[in-house]
Image 1 (cartoon, rainbow, N blue to C red):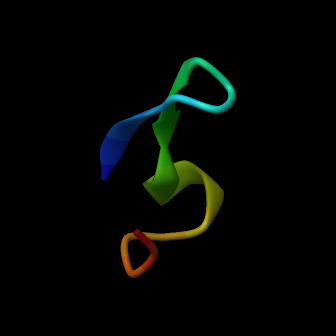
Image 2: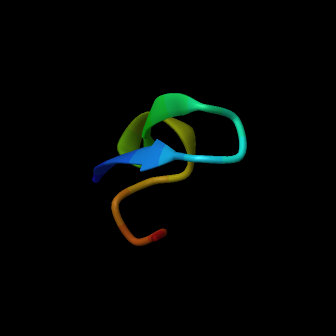
Length: 23
């Protein structure tokens, strides 16, 4: 998943960080 993290003000690609199972 790719989403915008308002707290860090950046685009986060969760599949690279935690895997597709994480939201």
